[in-house]
Length: 251
Ligand SMILES: [Zn+2]
Image (cartoon, rainbow, N blue to C red):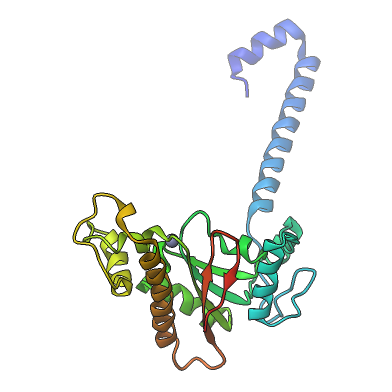
């Protein structure tokens, strides 16, 4: 807006009618800009989600049971013939207000072991908890409980993998803060620990793999104990083989 002195000068220069036209046009532009900003802000506000309505499913809907769906998905990954179902923005939008994952996966954080990829699943299918060494820390157990109690997941899979670095480290003496939380949980799986570890390659590959499998079993037992009393919920152990992409479900 113009001050009185500037307005007088401009009136002298351009004439009163032209100045009024300019001022009107400026006011309209400012009004429209303000309106556009207000509409933009309003559009970005989250809308309230409907309550007490069934959670939508993405196409194609899952027809197999949870464990069969995981086995089938891993077979597609290995073949290789992955379908990448439920990986569209449309699926993401459809599930913007709710989720109903059919399985919970407690997996290692290892970058080579992404459950959604290995099981060829998509948005809304798996509730994934990842911790180095796939250990059942209190945080991990809390996340699993949330998925079971509030999202109605009926299958929990504890998945370890070949050549897990966290398990390898448990052959060596106790590390420093933070890592020791994981080490304490994995260490009981190590039958023949090393007195020192100059190089992790000192760990025997066969013993390493035995410890991986024992750790999976121990963690599955911990999760089972934690979920005791929840009707219809099952816990399965799984072993991912980095060498061929297959996930086995040992009994
Ligand atoms: Zn690992």
